[in-house]
Image 1 (cartoon, rainbow, N blue to C red):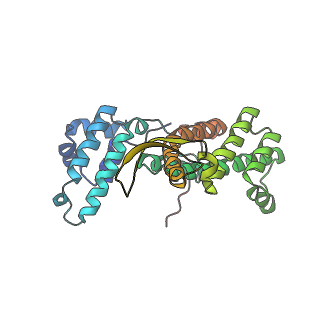
Image 2 (cartoon, rainbow, N blue to C red; image 1 turned 180 degrees about the vertical axis):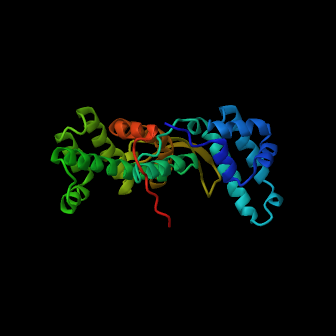
Image 3 (cartoon, helix red, strand yellow; image 1 turned 120 degrees about the vertical axis):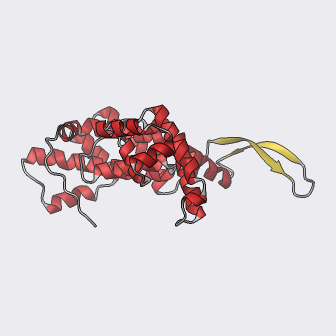
Length: 281
């Protein structure tokens, strides 16, 4: 696995040469050069220093004479969000091994870093469904000894999520523990998210210490509201749930992918996978 948040990638993202980048972030240019040559990611403390320094740098509109101040504010928010996800940024991620799975995986990961938790969950769900169907196709092609034809591929693509799980279990692609986990994900994460079933997953939740104020008397009091009776509370709770669930769910999906594609990932890491084609838009 690899950490894509290298010094070189960060530096090129903000379009600075080594000298200017070193000055802005307060890290010696020699250290910047050594990290880029080795390809090693910065330490957690260095990453903290970089994100704080870049946030301060972009906080001043004068530093960006060709951009509007609103973009400065956006960059500041991104930097602060990244700092809040410092531990996640240090996580070792899967390498590029598939032309569709890895980019979707990267989208889900980056959405979490930017605080887009519902988007991360949705992307993770899309990714997981594709992976299950891809594994079914791989298994059938292995059993058949050749590629599936277009009609056979379409039969797999049109499978409902629950049916794809059942087939994957029947064809020994997933074990019983994975089947149960995937069925739970389908009922309590994927379906409520994709079909906006907020009530299903929040009706038993409560939100304590809600301040209520009377418009006529001005009297205030603290209340406890539940998701079953209050639509607004459902919305608040759902967003909070998404925030709490996004990273653990992403890690589970990642571990599932790492397990099921272990051979392919190993080949990718050792350079034995062959050519990976990129279509330029």
